[in-house]
Length: 592
Image 1 (cartoon, one colour):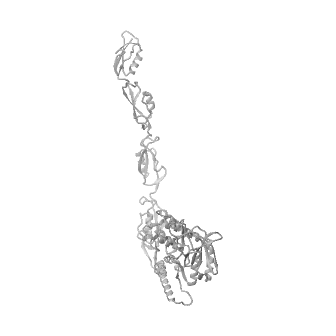
Image 2 (cartoon, rainbow, N blue to C red; image 1 turned 60 degrees about the vertical axis):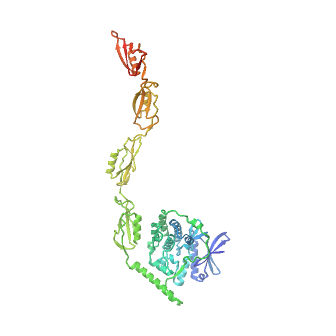
Image 3 (cartoon, rainbow, N blue to C red; image 1 turned 120 degrees about the horizontal axis):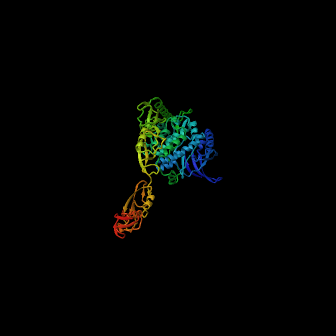
């Protein structure tokens, strides 16, 4: 066996279980404890209860017993460090690291409390951290058996002075909320690197727990979020009725705050980077001590005057604290928080030693959503500390139906929104094959749904149909080109061409494959044929055919009948066939 730790109740050894081939930790209790029959009876009862706890965040108890009057417990061996060792090495923990450990500790307490077991001595020394970052609470059962034994023997209170709850110091029965107070003190120490109260003696520290309010962690470490200040404050309320009702509620509240904490190095990495711990007790650690609670009947011992003095100090402390808390009225003015965010208002009210309560929200056109709309009692009212102040949050403007703007013009949409108590917001243009240009295609809040009154409704406005690529019509006849360009407005221009036959498209604008919105203008250039050419011979042709042929060449036709004849055949022409003419010239034919 290898000695690995020592404490107020005994020593811890590392051993090997030969039956199950596993490493275990054996806590051997001090022999003087075994001489007390009352302790032995309580030890048996509490050991059985602790052995019934099975949770990943609790150090398991495998067995217990006695050999030659020496009592021991066989427990799970945890490879890692105690939370005290990590805190000593790091100085303090980041909010995310502290929240990780605390939520695991609360999970362990939640399980134990459901089994009817209150730890009574939660402190960093009793929290072990594995190399994987798993927190395990130890000494369940032993703490209560030891505390009961010391209380019965000497009329005193056993525990670690830095972490004792006020009700323990006053001799009142412990309950699950007693453990929550200790967790709150541990949280303060993890965040700041030191306990909230210190003194030259355990009695001095205990007196501060009775008299003083636990300060905000951010007063010593400005990086601590305000949400953690409030959580630690609720956990360390002197009146246990004001603390969270259970470890479950405390863990849920902490998880809600932790969601916003900056990321930090995992706690498991801190454990792995630490050197192996020494088995010798650390004199800087907070030991479990005995604090006088009342006068013991029996023979006066040497030094009884000192015990009497201590008892008198405690009695005075308890009386002073009770008078300060319950007899002397403490009044404060309700601070002005109307219009503040709920988080800021809550922090300000808690700073004034008042309790926050939330009422159902109400709509408001003036106060933004999530800010304080009303407060009761009213701002400036003088009330007792601890009074419940009810905050009514604003839900923002009331919800009203949104009009349907689809297909409306911008002036029409603006008028409809004004009548429905909305404003027209951002206008985004977009092509639409469904709605004509200038009409509303879509809106940020659909018609018939509700939206906050006075809010802006954004719309998308049609730019007309989606642009389409132009087909190539060059080389096509004018008729063919027009048939291919039916989606656009066709404009025609003419141009002489020595290479392109008259009537065919010489050019187009825009160019082929250019995307042009349907309905826009497209220009085609149609060939007028050559500018100079030889006129054909029309003699022998019928009048109408000759006229059509002349006009098809871009020439003007003029005809005259031969006097005394009534035929319709061309008998002569001017200029004669083969004569070179200019496009647009006049050709005269004579018909007989």
